[in-house]
Amino acid sequence: MGLMTADEYRESLKDGRMVYYKGEKVEDVTAHPEISVCVNSMAIDFEMAHNPAYKDLAVVYDEELGEEISRYYYVPKNGEDLLKQFELIVQATTLGDGYIPLAHDIGADALNAISITANAMGNKEYIERIENYRRYLKKKDLAVVAAVTDVKGDRLLRPSDPKQAHKDFYVRVVEKNSKGIVVRGAKAHISGAAYSNEFFVLPCRAMVEEDKDYAVAFAIQANAKGIKQVVRPFKPFITPFEFPRKRPVKMITDSLIIFDDVFVPWERVFLCGEWQYAVTMVYNFALLHRRTGCAYRIPLSEQFLGAAQAIAEYNGVANVPHVREKITDLVIYLETLRSLSRSACLDYVVHGGIPVPNPVTTNIAKYHFASKYHDVVKIVQDLAGGLLVTAPTYKDYQLPELHEDIKKYLGGKAGIPTEHRLRMFDLIRRMTRAELETIALHGEGSLQAERMTIYAEARKAIIECKKLAEMLAGIGEE
Ligand SMILES: Cc1cc2nc3c(=O)[nH]c(=O)nc-3n(C[C@H](O)[C@H](O)[C@H](O)COP(=O)(O)OP(=O)(O)OC[C@H]3O[C@@H](n4cnc5c(N)ncnc54)[C@H](O)[C@@H]3O)c2cc1C
Image 1 (cartoon, protein in one colour):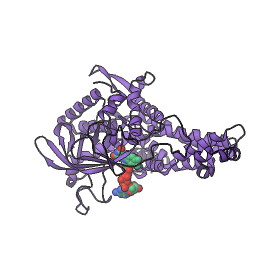
Image 2 (cartoon, helix red, strand yellow; image 1 turned 60 degrees about the vertical axis):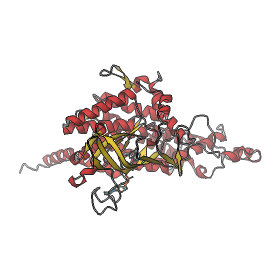
Image 3 (cartoon, helix red, strand yellow; image 1 turned 135 degrees about the vertical axis):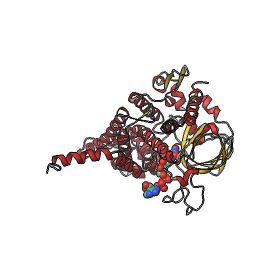
């Protein structure tokens, strides 16, 4: 079939999947007035592959198949390949106005994490299955997301701990037969799942032997029997109280996916009971996905910088020393994220035969982004001023008896139309909402998860530095 067009992608979603939204079952996600906004955002990935302006970035020639495939499903060979994938995600997210198309990027992170784990295990069966599945994805160019985060129940208890209120807080194997396995459980917050073709399901934590039924990874079609999705509600449009714009709104959603005794054939199973390797899979997924997460946040950080500069100019304070300092802080935030992320790609390491971004630098980049995100929001809100939350709405601005008054009294610097100022408040209000702050903190793993990885990965370097300090102190000479 080759590279899908955006229309073919939309058509492929009419497959009888079970999706619930705001208390109702959605018959066709492509026709739903709200979820279709997300379908169109996800379609950006497919549009890029057919647009000459982005094709070089989005598509590669695959020697094995002798055809063009999505760059996402291509196995990176070196740091340059990792960097190109990174730049592709930055570009796709820019086109998505900061919302990520997601059709391939999270799936590709899971695909590579599974390949790395199969290679590390040296299990020929798994290696062959994941290579076959990669070939299938390359040929069909499907949208695939990653369902990793289990609902978990009591966070301090293991999946198999009898003290958990029930056995199904982590996805587990409940039956094995000659044709495949049957799985039960639920995964939470799964981005893009309602309008992806398939999901990769991976364990979300390290396991011990007692957890072996939970050490399971597989790929499954979104419309497979027994799968239900509950999509979180969202605001899909610019409300009638905000200034309208022609550019379509972009959005993505996240799903709770319930696996109610779902059958998975063996050729789609990539881990089943090898509890020692759950950690390899989740670790490599988290590493790859944090690099992807950093790419998502570059366009968003550029938006913050741009909005801060614009509103400071509109308010007439752009050249005041403390404002320039705050704008400089935003530049430092953005460029630190960009350079750490790029250097993580170029300074890559090899896991299970596949180049992956440098683990320490990647985790520092993600931690930098997430831990300072609220400071960035604070700067933009500070520069905007209180009208950010108290300005009259677009509807008030439109009323003939109020229009001239609002125009007169809510103007800022001479020469800047009042409407520009009010439009910028609308944008900043959308950009600084709490929902995005939570994504910054928890998307791709919590702050603590990043700190733990940085410490574990930097352990060798810490010991080398300690030896250096001891040498300088003359310790060992006595
Ligand atoms: C918008 C959004 C999109 C997402 N998209 C995806 C996706 O596409 N696919 C996917 O698989 N996941 C996705 N996630 C999930 C994301 O990776 C998780 O939110 C993150 O790993 C944190 O898990 P949690 O939400 O269950 O929080 P919790 O694990 O409940 O964490 C809450 C707090 O408890 C702490 N904590 C938890 N367990 C322990 C412990 N054992 N010991 C000490 N402290 C602990 C954490 O550090 C944190 O401070 C998404 C999340 C968000 C917010």
